[in-house]
Image (tube, rainbow, N blue to C red; front, side):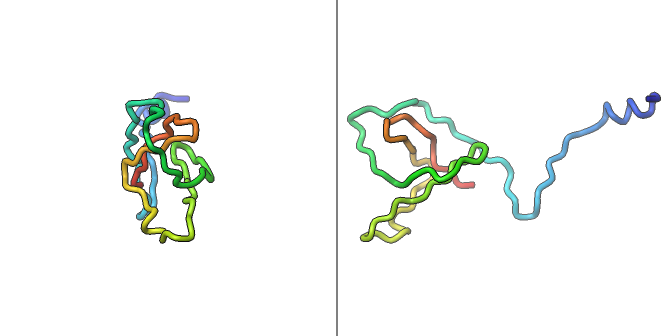
Length: 93
């Protein structure tokens, strides 16, 4: 390699290309606790269908008496596993 090639490589910048409607990486809030206590009331909201990078896709567990809009979760709702270990917060992507 000659000196010109080396200068070009040193000035290289990594660029992330996104489509017009693609959002950037969301800020992830880390819960301050690792497990909820036995006195906390838990409500089953669904089951994990897939995990892609740092995004968990949860299939809502519907009941015949509720509409989907009644089961929607607010952003920052804490999700936990059956064993009360914390998964993380619901996030708006």
